Image 1 (cartoon, one colour):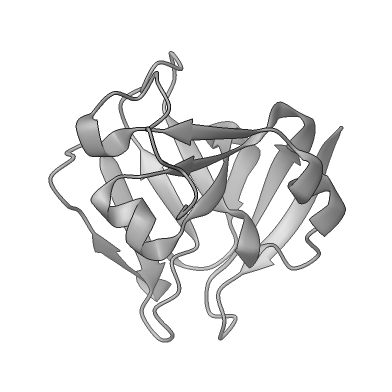
Image 2 (spheres, one colour):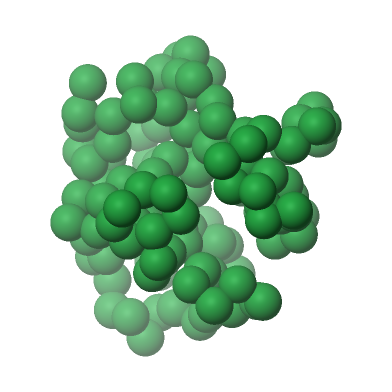
Length: 135
């Protein structure tokens, strides 16, 4: 069921809202960035995400993947979401929302949602990695 969630970083400087349907599932990736963060996210269309804070509240890291932008709070450093410019098999640019930053996370809905594992480490986005226990 599609629901609007509000979320924020630890210090509340970065705030957002997103329309999320946990029935569509969540994702975890083994790329060098996501695995270090243990980034558990849900993918939403850009039109279903709204940053409620000023962009100036964010700093951004961009690694080797030129389409993945990793903004984080300038004050507390929490990674709230990713912006993905080029579709990775979706057909549209999207936002990966860190579900642990949702203010009123329905933990049961998140835990019961299907999880898709991505093999970003090998740039094989359509297949799960061999090992997922650490994600």
